[in-house]
Length: 134
Image: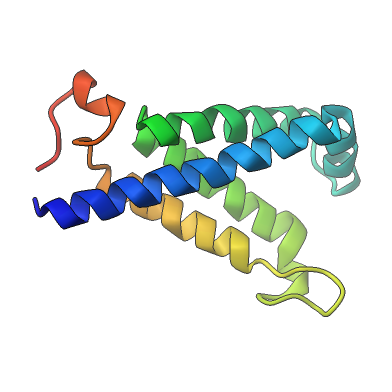
């Protein structure tokens, strides 16, 4: 495996982890009850807000250190697809002039899909739990 590909994958993994970590922290700072009310207003179960917040917080940390990258990335793909379909799709890709579109969620879903598909372990904690992909 080319070292440059490994470094690019590692940088992408860490930066996506930071983005999700910040989103999880933001949900906790807003108050999970407020986030739960928002989810409920969208027709989603309130408990899902708690699940998403914890997944973003813990999953973000996991991506940063490279622990369970493939599995965390798959969860993030599902979360982003849910956000697109349930919240943002009606606004279009770039938004409707009043509300943001789903371009960020789509980019995060596709980046997470890349992390799940490639899953290089050389520069990650995962390398201690199995054979590294070469």
